[in-house]
Length: 315
Image 1 (cartoon, rainbow, N blue to C red):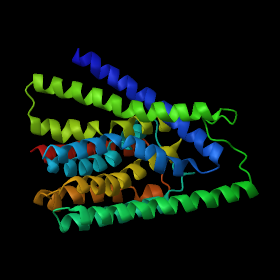
Image 2 (cartoon, rainbow, N blue to C red):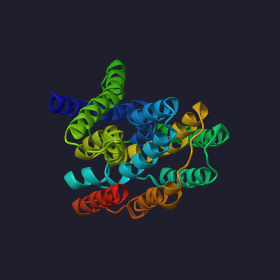
Image 3 (spheres, helix red, strand yellow):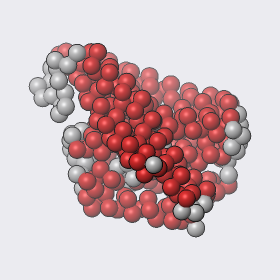
Image 4 (cartoon, one colour):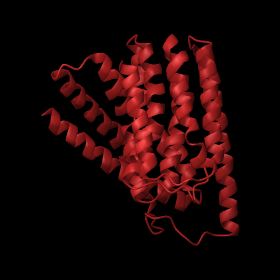
């Protein structure tokens, strides 16, 4: 039964990811804003729902360390695994993907988060600082969207992104978005629960389960969305989803969770995990700034680095 539930969860993830990408691409077409901005906001926030639910629940269950570990582990997985797997499958072409500004904001959010952790434990005051950073990012995205719409009215785009249908009614676009945003966390939950049960049956410790299944499981919505986007040749949606999710994890999830209760910072985070997260973010520099093609070789490298990171953490 556990294997059946795991398969159902995986199928639900892939189907919901496809619907969310379709909804995001058509939303960008109808609103006249880049698919990158839609993926940085609607898609990113939706795929980060599992991290938010788990982090808040961890605070309420008097296990605040899980909240911080979940976010830091998920951010590392988002880059090395969530971008590595689709690069391994079909490659990601960054030629027409201009995400330099959002990438710099993600690096700034990472440095702000590391600074807040260094002042730990993270209290509601630190949380307000992180939420203020989120407000700054969203305000900038809103301004960029308005500027893009003005440019589109002056010089309308000729080419439409793959998967876009100018005749698709709004009710269907909203339905795609809703089903995708609901199906992703539901599919992730089914897969995490089933995988945890299977692992426990084979005698795997709770520590290993937490470091692997929970961190990877909460990144499954991003992974499903990114794989579908890569297959549809929507690299801007794939990269925007990862960058937006990482910013949302750092600024919104920990910001909101800290309003529920204080979050202690384990010394190991300050000496290892946070710097691995930052190093993983810096790996994207040539792909974002120089627009290198992320082919299968890079997919192998990214996935291997993530496996190596897990091996170090477990040992």
